[in-house]
Length: 498
Image 1 (cartoon, rainbow, N blue to C red):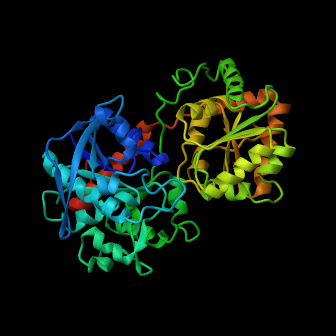
Image 2: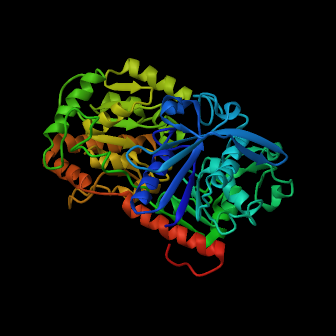
Image 3: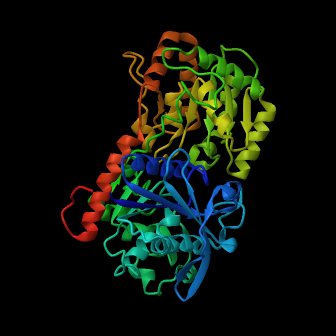
């Protein structure tokens, strides 16, 4: 049995900001089901306190050498809910004993993030030594875990990890961990690595760039996004380095856990439904509208949005005070819209102001899992006008829950949603080619017209989407192929079976 260590700043349900946390846990659970020895390591943030009494504390502290200094951490151990995947938490009051994962809500990242995540990455190697468990693969996720790839190729190159291969997954290449070059001191490597290990970035350091340079294999979370970030327009400065990696970079579409996201059995829903029996969905729409105080009435299209309220998700365009913006959509198209999420403080304030003025717009500025499930199940459509979207999960939930997705033609959205063809009836959603206020407006107008004028076509489109499956079983097989390639690169031989 092959051993795989997941190193991440997030893992659901313990710590989650976006899709990263869900992807790490779901992939780990699927690989475990397929017989692999999977373990996860992440920091024990304050947010994990709620489960602390359920965690096993290891009796001895873990010493983590970082350059000339040594940090001491506690180690807690838990399990992923519903399976036996071990999850290890590094406890360090100075670095992790605070609210927030990357920074305080609505603020910038913590000033000591390089030291915080260097401790996680160096601690991963020390934890394996403590457990007497040396992985075949270290799978790191995004810039906070990218240092694992550097440490493996430098200070761990001739240790018991000499035959361990590294895989780095870019969940969002727009977040790179860019800091002042003095932060090199917190990494614990000699200054000659500033250039040789790929940290140097406009006279600062870039943790993701260093990870990309040193990883044995690189993946990202959809084939479409993999193609996009090879271009200067969407590569966020990493396109040249990714092109250099050539065949050691691939896009693997995220999946979702259909045992959790199933409208026929979802425990968070008061009613259930399927593509062949949609009565429950109508009841859920009524329940949702009552819960968020939207005017009653089934003949009004209800559109949902869930997620981070940030520029990437299209909020800058929606709130642009130009023809076709969110206010115009609400005032002119006869739809109702519910938005759930948190993010940019200025966008939050503007949304709250609009919701106060517009009775058909409801904005809930919080993270609420139960309400998220109810929105997916109760809405007729789901709007995702992202400027870029590495994979996206909400459009996958929406397809399964019959909330017809209205999405931009980018990344994983383009890989998973097929534009509705009025002539043939084919398709699973409505695709917006270029994100402008007017184009979003026209897409919503198209959805509203379909809702009001052709109930048979609407039902057919909904059923086609609900029948689609994007499972982790398929994705896990592609990750296993990536692991094989990484092992072959690391060990200098032809890739064989794991």
